[in-house]
Length: 398
Image 1 (cartoon, helix red, strand yellow):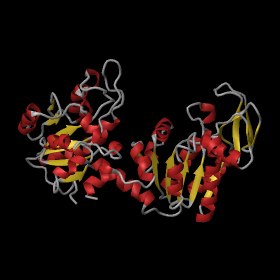
Image 2 (cartoon, rainbow, N blue to C red):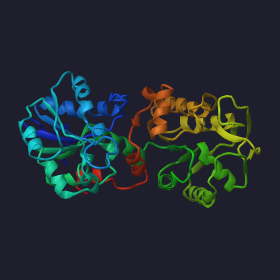
Image 3 (cartoon, one colour):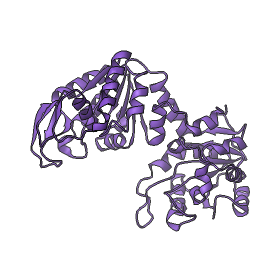
Image 4 (spheres, helix red, strand yellow):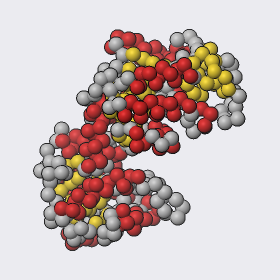
């Protein structure tokens, strides 16, 4: 398999699938360029070799063909600035004779951005004829969009067949896959996963898959109370999925059978209102009074979480253990972040992934203290579920 590091892009048009689905304000100004910055190492490598990056991406969710508000035009100037003033042009479309002509004439060191792929329904349908037209704009294909690697779209997977010997991952996907494999395939032991969030239902398949891999599984956040109720506890007004009580019992049974240590809150910070001004009290997790709801882990639980994390060799964190957006209920999640940073300093490999977890580490300033932060959403979760990602399989030839 080709790798971006050993491939020479000199004189080549490198068709790169990136994830430039960035947020824009009402003035069409980029409000967060994280995804653009993530692609820079790949783009810069191609330029340094003497190649010409031809960039493909989607933006937003256009419904019926081209819409001005979903154009990639607002990204041109900023990408040029990020690339130190490189000349960046945008094509009027992503396929067609005019686009092909522009791609054929792009000079080494110049960058061409193709217009929004999702202006065509054929992109999300994985249409092979559409993929063939896209392929005409490049001499090789680089997939660097991990955030869309779980989709079998024309530009993320189907296009691979038109570049049998000239396809590869970009640096971002390489680092994502390498980091995830350190967790799910080659972990230092003990491996601890911390799964938080409100609902068991959204994490069932991940939890079940992780039970075959982890030594310790810390379950936190709102999903805790589904387990508490399944075991006959009182959860007051806490969030609880009554339809998943059997599932919770089954997860506990599976963990015991596989020798996985399942750790959940034994005490919680309960509140009489979902607000910073609420009255609070520490209560046993299974004795929450009527009218009260558990919104964070209690001190006894936090101490237990810290002990497990700081003695781990590999740590995966997906989801907060409390309502961290409200300062009063952020202690548990903050303590977990601090423990992960401490464990990483001692040599553990730590991976943080999922929207809320990433927001959390950035909010509390932990980003530099963990080994890797995955910005992917659905692709990360599906990888953790053990699913084959079409965008990964297409490059590997699987």
